[in-house]
Length: 122
Image 1: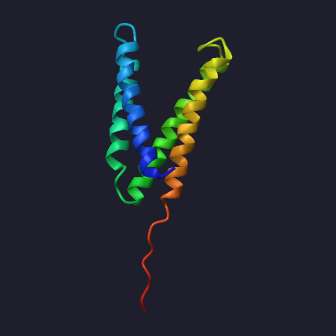
Image 2 (image 1 turned 180 degrees about the vertical axis):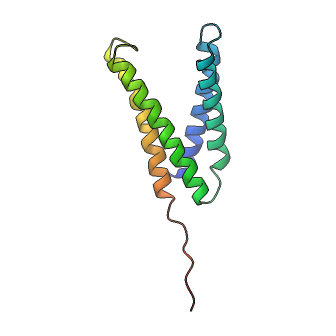
Image 3 (image 1 turned 45 degrees about the vertical axis):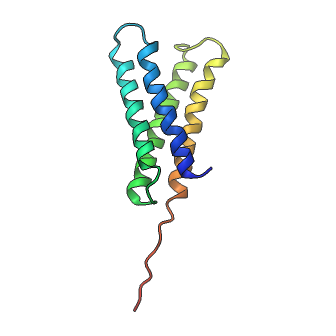
């Protein structure tokens, strides 16, 4: 999958997930709303950098996205293993999706890291 399409899909997914937090949380819970805002901002960043040419800044942003998605995946796996999430094995689906998103960001940052090199004309 091309990096542009991957960033478009993840950007839309992050924005939809961030908006859905506001409708699914019961009452005002700061951490869930903070996560919703965080997801919306990540989605907007994905949508804004999708047409940029490969650069070190873009690769750094994609690597930071990898770290954040990996952290969310590991926390979700920890919650599932300790029984704080779902009791059934279906609870492993969401951490696995986040893990695939993290791997996608890592592959996208590594794929676009081949920047054009300037020849030394001596």
